[in-house]
Length: 213
Image (cartoon, rainbow, N blue to C red; front, top):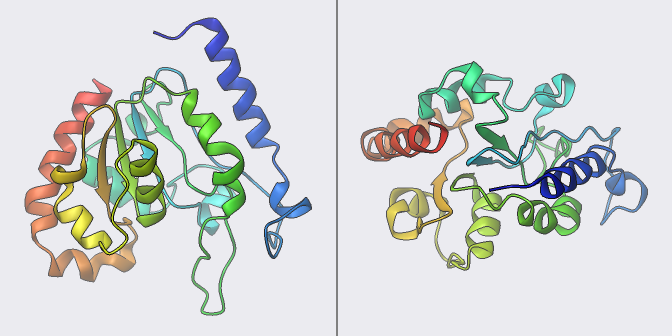
């Protein structure tokens, strides 16, 4: 059970994250190529955490995580309404990089900024002890959250292997469910790997329903 001190501490930390300018003023490497706009949603009540990679351009503009086609697919995977998805008392959304990192030479999204994880994540998750289930989307989130739970992933494993054999890695409290990115660019992967919809999604939906009930 949380108390008022932990709630106020979480709110203060969220406020500092929202005002963060480290990647512009004291970056690790090239500075962020635009003004920071950290995007996250959290509360001291949510038991389900969506741990994603980093906001895309559409989310950077709107300030609302997964407010795009990837979010539509993720909500379909989870079998939750848009209203439930954005209920901070039920679902926290904390990406590995809080700001849109910019584009690479091929117009793809750059990886999450290291500054976010190194500066904020350990302190943030120490203030979220009530989280029972984590949906770890992509390898950056998977490596961090499994290691933090004391179950580091072997580097030789690919995301496909981790997702397919998620029960072997999931553990308990927090139970971590590894997922691929719900980007529509992964539609071909989903079609080639029918086991994902047949085996992983039913289990995912059961865990989500349990965590947000």
